[in-house]
Image (cartoon, rainbow, N blue to C red; front, side, top):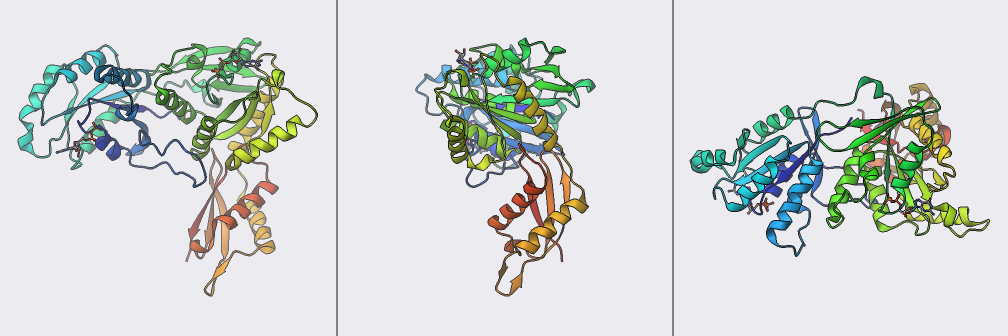
Length: 437
Ligand code: GDP
Ligand code: GDP
């Protein structure tokens, strides 16, 4: 479910980005034509012994800033304190303690977050001479590593995992649909949350996070249970220091990570912006179900053709999420907000849908009859059988004789055939081709 967030802080040149690259083992896959924010190497997924986490290098946050040195670092530390479940405070073991280290330590100590002090650049034992000096910084948990030579990384990861927060989700929330409202500032996300929670819903409960200050809201509507992820961030305005643009990006990314269904809230008076595309690209890359809500429809100038035209232009701009339904709503008047909740539920059911191996193979066989897999240099592509291996999103493994013969366009054809025969509105589906001798 919710992945713990690990933030790296420290003054420049101590080795933060080197460490980040070691911990960011698994690259998030990026579809070629998807605008993804994940390309910026400040945010990535990591895994250690089947424990998954998100890793953030706060040092990469604002590299072009003209801010004076210390105020810049102070901001980065604040981002870490607000976002992280665990903070890695990196210092330079060759240089020893500096005044800046002491100032960072003072800021971190007040945060109450678990902090692992990481003494870097200990490439050999003889560099340990300064190690004991670092106890002066007042942290109990001290580790030494060489990020460059990959020494001590395993032990550090063991420590990180030991400090993971215990899952805060009480059992009763287990089958609730986790929804995130995403989109650029001022598109109306807060208004939407307030409208939904302000209407008479069965129960509205705040679910505080363990260490992070993300507060989610639980409510029931008809027979369905919903959790609005990171509601506090939306309800408490100006919570985010808007000057650090990347900070709000990170906040959005962690919110997306923790959700099942993402509702991309568009300002209908403006249309899709570059920022909206990036955010949608990230949700898509991470296999989230998605809905596009064109908000402020109450004040958009419209005639009979408006819906169709608007829809067409969205489909053109956000070509990679053709599966997302589009709704025209108003968070102000509440128009079609109930329809939005119904759609979230429908999309979620598709997100967790399983189709039987029998039915799936009927669809694939039929598709192959109509359009054979490509051949190349005397090799004939052949599909043996397919099976669904998981949900959230639905993932299918298709066994073939030669993987390289299944080009993107043929894979797309098969996906379309599956979608024609089975309703997967709102969810990405993933086809994975495997060779079988
Ligand atoms: P950042 O500014 O904190 O992100 O630091 P970088 O990761 O860019 O590293 C700063 C410099 O320290 C680079 O020249 C790295 O090659 C070097 N460095 C990083 N880790 C180690 C290490 O474990 N040992 C040594 N000797 N040098 C390192
Ligand atoms: P957020 O930054 O995405 O959370 O956006 P807000 O909810 O703060 O909304 C930004 C502005 O748009 C506020 O002035 C809202 O009152 C206004 N707004 C939000 N939704 C609607 C809507 O459906 N119709 C109209 N007319 N204004 C809206």
